[in-house]
Image 1 (cartoon, rainbow, N blue to C red):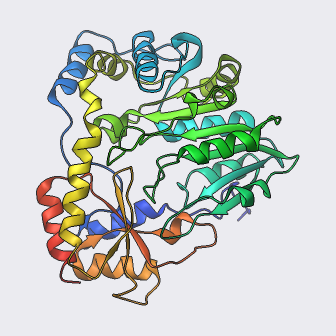
Image 2 (cartoon, rainbow, N blue to C red):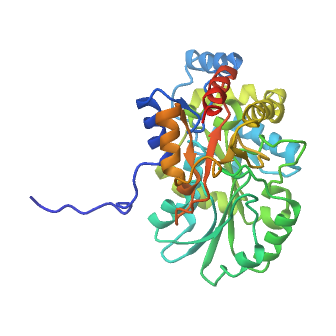
Image 3 (cartoon, one colour):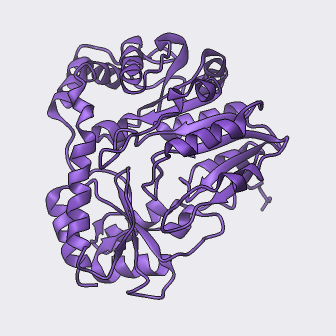
Length: 382
């Protein structure tokens, strides 16, 4: 038999999210691992989709997306962050946030270009950089604060640095960037040609009256940045895989050169439905309160246990230390928790290249009340 070549990602396995979800299914466990809601989206949104399908809007959309949706996105960004993007030339509808991230990296990263990421990091960043021949430079944020030492980041900068990838609010730590972080970033990239890829899919899920600081609020960063967001997180429809990338026209032009050969366009009726639904701002301005109530319910339920709850400033994930319960590494503990106590989580070490183990797991609280109640009941017995 002939020896066929391996793929460029031959060393990459199945994502931890798929692994833990499969383990949850096999053990009939409550799935707090994968980040998806287990409740229905708003029926009004579903009715809009049904309307546009039946009206016959079922063929290709324009490459950049339906203009009505892009106009609503531009309006949302303007209202939220006082930043202007031209709907037609600076906003592109994508097949989810991950496709936008992949396309941005594919468009700009060449062999031996260096890309800085902040760990714990969402798992698509590094493999995509490596797929296009780039080199990843990592800054490891550590429990319990997950703060960034910008002097250390400065030491990662070289003449080969092409891009910095941010995730704000951060999945999985739930931390948000502060004004000081943004000012340090501005100083870091000033006078350079470094691009910023800003993953802001959880921008509308920030708690305790704190403010999400978008990269587009700062002109000196906006001009070099590709901002990525997701309707899956915004409207509880992760399975629809619709997101967008907002960037200055010169960057958008390059982004779309790859986008057209990746997915070309995103399904038409859902774009039209989202555009109609977004005309009412109240459909997304309440998300902070909605998810804070779920976060607070989970935290209160676990407050009497031996789990240590770390700060959760945003996203719909709660980081939990378990070192008072077990000395197992986080993967083994998460596995035990799923099999014996019927609650699936994600070990934090999976978000680090070097598998940093600080006895921390991630719990998703974007779940129905009864799901959280049952999970708390099980976790309270650990």
